[in-house]
Length: 317
Image (tube, rainbow, N blue to C red):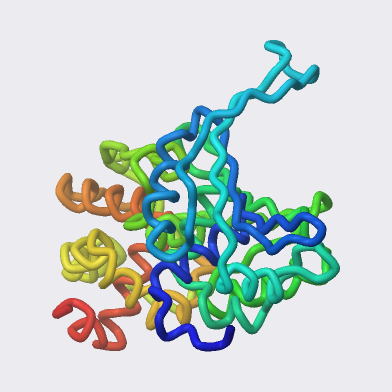
C-alpha cells in the first residue's frame, strides 16, 4: 500500500506516536498482522481516547479489561486494558515498514514524513516521563530502550532537526532532556495534544512569586553600562510585550525559533545589583515559569532586542 491520500493525516501522526510508544503490530504464524496497544488500568481514560481517535482509520475492537498474573507485584497480578484490531491492508503495509524479521525498527523515511507535534505528544503520553524538583521540571525521559543504540542516535538527530530539541542518550538507551529552557519548550509544543488524564506529565501551574526586591542580575560583558540602574530599567520597556509573546503558544514558538535559538544565552557575564518595580518583578517571574529562562537571560533578551530594533515584528504578532 503506497497511496496514503485516503488516510486521515492526523491519524497517521497519532499512529506514528503510538508505534514509537506502546503500540505494536502483532502477527501470528500464517495470519495477517493486527494493530495492538495495551495500557495500565490506571490509564483507562487515555486508552479509550486513543481507541476513539484511531478507530477512524484502523478497524479496532473496543478496549477490554485484562488481569495478568504477576508475582513481581504485591497483589500478584496487574490490571490493564487492551485494544486490538482486525486485519486490514493498511496494517499489513505498516507492519512491512515498522518491522524487520518481526522486530520493531525505526523507519526514518516514515518518521521524517509523519513525526510532528501530535506524534511527539502521543509518544510522550505513552512512553514519556517528567521528573520534578521543588515543583520545577528537571528532566524529560523518553523510553526508547526497545530500539538499537544506533537507531536512537538517529532518532535523537531527527528530534534536533525537526523540533530544535537536543536530547542525550543515557546508559539505559533512553532519550533524556535536561536543559530547563528546552524542557519548557518541549512541553509548550505538545500541550494542545495532552489528554486531561495525562496532565501529570506536564508542568503544574504555579502562581508566580515575586523576584526578590533587591537582586543580582548577570548581563553579557559586551553590554557596557555607565548608569546600570537607569539603563537596565530603560531596557525593560519591552518586558510587557515579551510577556505577551511567551504566554501565547504560537508566538512563543515562532520567537523561540527565530530569535532565542540564535541568541547566545551563555556568554561571559557581569553582575549588577538592581531593585525591580513590583510589576516588572511579577512579569519576569511569569516569563521564567513559562519558558525556563532565567531572570538574567530575560533582561539580556530585552537589551538585545532593543539594540537590534527587531522587536516590533515579534511584538505585533
